[in-house]
Length: 434
Ligand SMILES: Cc1ncc(COP(=O)(O)O)c(C=O)c1O
Image 1 (cartoon, rainbow, N blue to C red):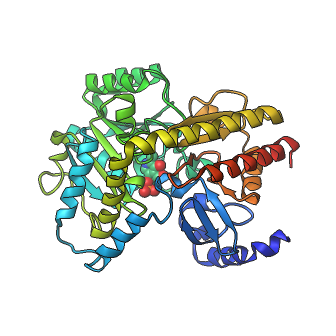
Image 2 (cartoon, rainbow, N blue to C red):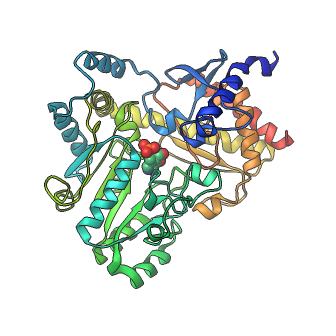
Image 3 (cartoon, protein in one colour):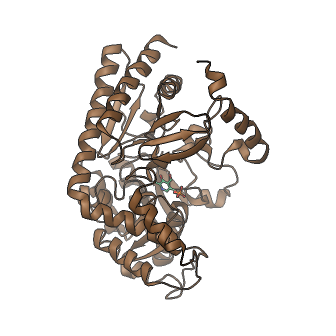
């Protein structure tokens, strides 16, 4: 079959999209060369393109869909709620129920507020921390991505790293100056920074497991180290669990590693496929949020009943089935990660594979990936070859080395077998330099 004919509709749509949307997309990592496939529909583990192709999806909307696409219970709940209206501009009992459910899973979030995106959640969490401490500076880590607002677009991961703009234009120098960027997993760098500037630091924000520079795990004792330092210097420790929440474990990294942050941001999975996020934490911090206190935060669509219904249904499903879901996902993920290790060895391809829970990523380099600097050593041309060959074989992974692959409960053993076959072909293509 002639590939150019098969995908021509996507190509046409991409040309049209570029005339009206910057880069033809509404979020940068969706754009890849020569052109992305355009989606018609999705169900379970599969995306169906406008060209009549289908792909086993390991992007899962960048981790948002742990139950797969168009999960029946979630869709039914949304359809039911739609009949009663989509946004009220007045509170509902649903919002309380959802907030109580989240707090029961994340007890560190004594109070929380619902917002519409992860970007909003981290922006407001940082403002709340600054308001609470009366300090300006924050510490973030190289290669962590916390959304696209000024304070955190300094040496950021995800698309910012992929497209060579980790520190964005348009962020005032005065703002960037208040963001101290440190290497992840470096115990002494942060100790040193606190020793010199401790009294000025409002917050430390971190992806406790980095999912935006590929997948990078914390060194033993590193999160505990951050907890101790922030306690000693009165800084607010913010765990950005927008990816890891409901993913690394039901209760996220804080449950998995047993480290309790002062504040947490959640998003992605908590929306059941619809846009919603949350920030929350210690009562003393959250009580400063308007109208209780002087830290302003607001949103027309915050806590809208459609997103809340989708999120509540998905999270409740996870709670009720957690003993089955999380161990099964982990075992499938281990199988995929082990296959990548074995196949790359067999093919003579130098690679590192990091995985945890239902997340994994391959890096084309000979050295272990411990932080952003080591991730940057990966051969991105090889990654592109791997990505394109997977696509040709019906498997879609995020099109960037600096992203992570995600499993869902909808991936069947048969999907996994097909994926492993595609891995082999993709690694053969990398080995051949095709
Ligand atoms: C860890 C993390 N924080 C924040 C965000 C921003 O979330 P959103 O895209 O919903 O604004 C992302 C998005 O990928 C993320 O991965």
